Length: 557
Image 1 (tube, rainbow, N blue to C red):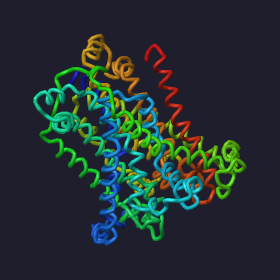
Image 2 (cartoon, helix red, strand yellow; image 1 turned 135 degrees about the horizontal axis):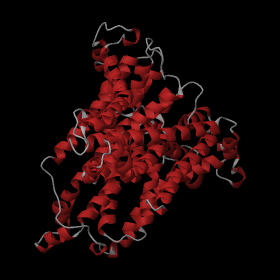
Image 3 (cartoon, helix red, strand yellow; image 1 turned 90 degrees about the vertical axis):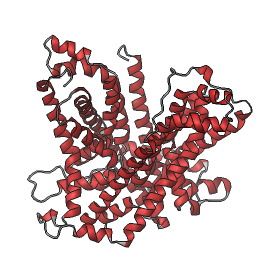
Image 4 (cartoon, rainbow, N blue to C red; image 1 turned 45 degrees about the vertical axis):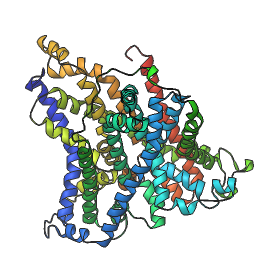
């Protein structure tokens, strides 16, 4: 044990463990059970392994698995091609307007993938904005593997860009300069010195992009089905939403998707094995960065091109569509207005209620996931009690559970006929789904904050008679509060517009922002859906920024 005694740590351990069992262990356990026992819903354990054998023998499953891996690898490759040169340039050279580019590259990550995809459809489809402005369309490219790869890479490349730029900036150029002194060419110095030092951050970001790509629902659903490109996520959705319902098959495919995420993690571990590099110098100064010189124009052109595609096109498409009275009327002054925004505010189609539901769920998810994540981190980092490793594994398990898998697990766990009370078909099921999916974010943030705090402060409080809970509440929580609040803001932004779990487990008659947008497109009310999308983007981006700004101005900040 550390400074906390076993008695002080036990309430925290039990509370954290109970929360993780409810949010993570129960849905995952029922996925495994349903994959093994097809009659689980009726209380029967007959014919075990039958769905496993039947689903794995399906020809469609092989094709969906190959397509999933192919799409994931293609998105990783294109995201790396886009992000690595930009990140390296940002780290090693003095880029004009560098903070502006950082903000522009952050925006795609704040736009939900399904909204960006819908924006690209409106731009590149026949009679879309590209054809109205330039006279041609690219629908054949958009509804293909290449189109899906481009759309998803433009949405995920910021993960790699910020990781590479921060990692390479920490390394600086002085180590490659030493190699240059000893005769290495600039390219050789980069490949043999700078890149190996940046390998951990690059590998971790590419792994995250792969995981995001194989679990993404909106883009394959909107683009892949029309191109006949089915992936595991669409296979799960098909077995849940189309008659006859095949829950055992959906559970088996869910486990396969989890296995792919786990294999990607093992590949990352393999790549980094024996490649632990560290520097002995401090933080590089601004003098380490070089002027671009003759590269100024091409580098700025590259930054501008990527920013235009990743940020400009989706935002333009969303706003232009939201302001059109009729989609067939096109981009002409007489067809533009604010009617769709007025309809949202008047709640004529239930848009305002959907917005209120999503914001309420976002706040509730942020509070529950943030507080539980802080408690889990305290148990893992600051106590030596037995069971903390199990708690750590459970807290990180959602990293390997795509949103659609969590939704399937919740359906299987809480739709059992023997349950006297269940959150299924209530708004609470959405809250459980969001908390499970997003719990790793506050855990990671708080782990980093707690690791920077020594045990002496807590030990001093214990010497003065404070219990473990009192020390946590009066000492540790105020110190880690900025990190916890930051993670809660991220959770709020993502939960307020989550799509896949919302579509699968939302109760009858309850709409969220995501389901409202998705259904408006299905019903042909595209302008109304895009008006909601624009409002959601603005609110879920500005509200966290305002809170962070207030935190920085406060004495505690």
